[in-house]
Image 1 (cartoon, rainbow, N blue to C red):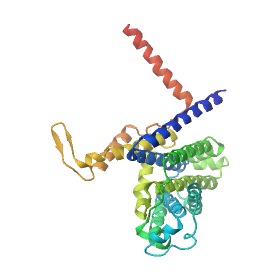
Image 2: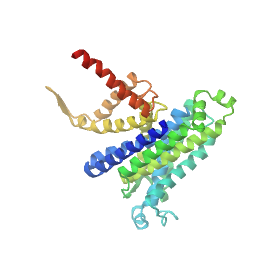
Image 3: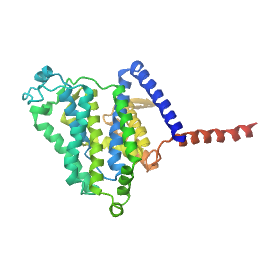
Image 4: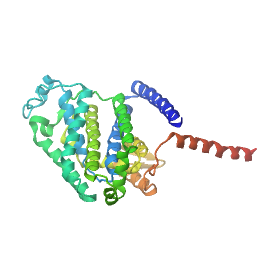
Length: 355
């Protein structure tokens, strides 16, 4: 009975989200829509990284590499064949990329599959490593992808990148993919597979003793995580409409990692909140670089002040919320109504004492 009511509440929440997306897509200006789009893409990327890092305990820094794979696959699939002949200046595009063309949804799905395949191939040997060593190995993989993309101009157009990618990404796509990602990852976490992942995170030796196949679970977690990173990369490419190897440098992985740590390791709710806060702060701090007045004080334009201010904000948040914004707590309808009830009951005595 309780599960039935939870499903009804979730359905109502999805209808409200649908109405919000409809309003935002039709009423907000392009700048605000882009921030919301980036926030939703970071939800997909953050929740997927949380699966391997937060829930499985494997420190991975390779998300930018999987994003790059997804972005290039999507770009090559959605670009019309006649336009590919125009933009590949350094070297002609290699066959069969010259003739293949696919709808956006198919391109996104294939982007995820190619990224997942790459993760499966490198995951088998790399996931034998632990901790910092695994982080360095996956970071090396992301750098290899970026350098390879820079040096195969007959597929990626080299350092010039691919321009004029159709702008298919909108709020319906980004929010829709984010909701599907949360639904699938949450389902995995609540299954026996997810409990095995958390057992590995807590103690690998104990998990192995009770019969959990470490290699299988680690590689599957890594592969699923890379699938959604590839899809996120495809959305990213069709939002910016241009990609090049520089877009997938280490700073991209750092941004996703910051979202996961800020939201709280192993917290999907925290990751969702942190993804939007991260992008809002990053964008709305831009005016301070142009100089501003604070009372009688006049601050001149200082290039880079935005990132300094942003880093200070992150530092303060991490110092006061060491377990992340949500501290490992997940959203639930029961908790939500308990919070509402607590606010209501706390308010009552105050009103009584006043009278």
